[in-house]
Amino acid sequence: MSADIVARGLAKQAASTSTGRTVQDKLSETVSVLDFGAKGDGVADDTAAIQAAINAELTPNGGALYFPDGIYRITAKLVIPFATGWRIYGQSRRGTIIRQATSNTRIFSLESDLIHSWEIGHLSFQWAVNQPASNTQAVAIFLGTGAATSSGLFDWHVHHCVFHNGFRGVASDPSNSPAVWGATVDHCQHQGTMSGAMVCFVPTPAVGQPRITVADSTLTLTNASEAGVRIYYGDNIVLRSLELLGGTAPIPVIEISGAFVSLIGCKVENYSAGASSTDPLIKLVQSQATVINCSCNGLSGSGGAPRFIQGVTGTQLAITGLWCSDSMTGGTPIAYCADTISLVANVRLQGRFTDKLRSYIGSGAPLPRLDIDKRQSDAVTEIGDASVTLNAASDRIQCFTATVTAARSVTLPGSGVAYDGMEFEVVRRASSPGAFVVQVIDPLSGQDFFFPANCRGSIRYRCIGGGSWRIMQASTFHAADTGWTASTGTASKAAFAVYAGATHTASYVQATVQALDNAARDTARRVKAIEDALFAGGLIRA
Image (tube, rainbow, N blue to C red):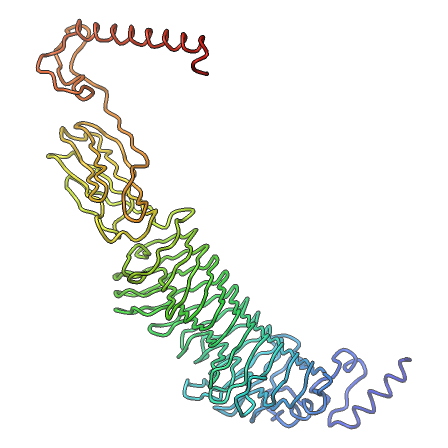
């Protein structure tokens, strides 16, 4: 097709619209809202022009509509009629702004059943003034057919969008909801001026919603009155690489119900739990949920027991990769809890975070399988010169750093052990340990251990077999023995008593020590001779 034919065709189209434009403009923009009279100057009311463009270009057979950079002021909702395979896109998500001047009013409203295979991207949705949570119609992309239906709106994609000053970003009608399935929302920004969710699919009455993905987005929930992502009755829900900032108890940042939920690489930061919250940050209901490489950082509060991830009503939870830290001044934040926890691995807990308390896992619930690493943080308690009794929430390492002035003991937990694989390590490392024994008491299995007087060392216990302790490693070492010299032969009955099976009452002198040493050397030679004979006879191997 020659350039003059293209020019004549485009000139004819310009004559049929309210704005004449150059060939170069039209060729670069394809079908633009400017061709239908939209100004994009932030002053003119572009509602009628954009609606005319939608009606003309979006058809049951597809279509595409382009918004060049500008501020498109509208005063009513923009209704998208029944159409499939269409695309609405802007020049850039920061520079292409659709601004709703009328409060409590939608921007795009999809009001027909079976609208599918569509795409909206590279746009910024704004309201002229902040919309409170009571303005429930202030939704950027509204999905509602006027009647509950299982047919719904499916196989669609919203991407590279910004939501500002409204209530919700992408949401279905809360009272007469169509099903939503095969949907993806990604690479979006939900700003802190939004008062509701970025994604909200909560159908009434209940209807199944399979294959929904929310990914690669940042949600600032400073003023949110509900979870940033709310999806009910889902199946195969994937939340991937989400950054959720802020939020305040008791409102969760994520709320999902339905089978087969995956949280992959999601991060929650700077959530405020208050003084007494026991509510979850991520709430899962009736789900088989998998958590992979997620984190909670900077959780604040002064008390209570907020849960980072909580599964209820039959939720089964498997975790492979979780990192939690907090800045709370009181309370006990819980990393996760659920009715059934099938697997926990690669978990790191810092600060006040714990997952060791059996009561938070659920009374009578099956315990998770043994980790492939540590679920207890390597926090250290300096015992000092005292005896202690441990519980399931005690630090993994218990350390005597002072000289003991009497016999001391460390008693392992006798009940409330949270899981097989829990470990405790007792270390005696004072430079002057003290002339008294330190005993480690095992109330479950009776495998007690003694650090002798004047002895340093460590011992590590692990819980195995549904509630018994086993010694996994033990070592002791002494300071260099003193008490005699070669020149004087000063007596010292303590020089060998720590090694002997009985305490000798007589003093040792240098001659006696030399005799014992000679006897030990002779015994070693005899053992070596026996070993050589057994080897030569083929009874043992090297």
